[in-house]
Length: 259
Figure 1 (cartoon, one colour):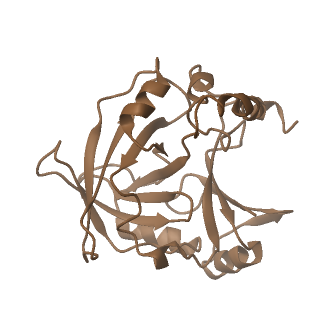
Figure 2 (cartoon, rainbow, N blue to C red; figure 1 turned 30 degrees about the vertical axis):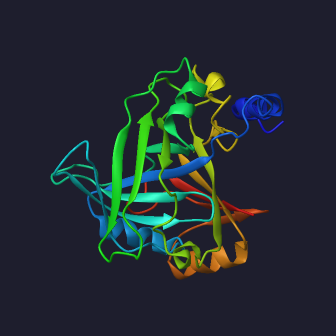
């Protein structure tokens, strides 16, 4: 047993053996947003961790005409980080996970599978790159889950053609990052709706009872990761098959890299 704080992880895995017969696919982690007043500084911080950070883009929404949200992306083979600039006049100086979104084929079927958990109405977005690719703007829609499942907001998201506007070279990272595994929380246990949500959302990568909030990433080569962190003057510790990076500079969360 991995510790009392991880009891739900074990329960979720046991449920998955049965539940996957009921639902063909568990919804995987799609992306984790980070927000900061200084988007350039946030991007530079991720580069110090050894990630490749995409050029700048803007999110727009037919549900909020005239609104624009600057963004940059860190795209992995499995999942991505959405680096966002908070609105002008915002007070967020530190950056950490603001929510976690799970990828669905379509929102309607995912919402039905998640009943009776309540979801907000869908919010539509389009992504527009400052240097437009040869493909049209990517359209997507997401809906927040109102039930308390984890210490931060969870949501489901669906795309019209996921990844179609992302340059494949952007997924190749100096630190060999491959996939977002999940999140770690200092809370001793998940929220009361977690068991119901785990019938649809893949929560197996969530950990509880951690020293603080953290992001967990799978990499291909820990030596390569360590070289990037050293070059970026980032403090880290290494124990067995894992590298741990404490919160630093504008990051209020930890990062754990493992193979």
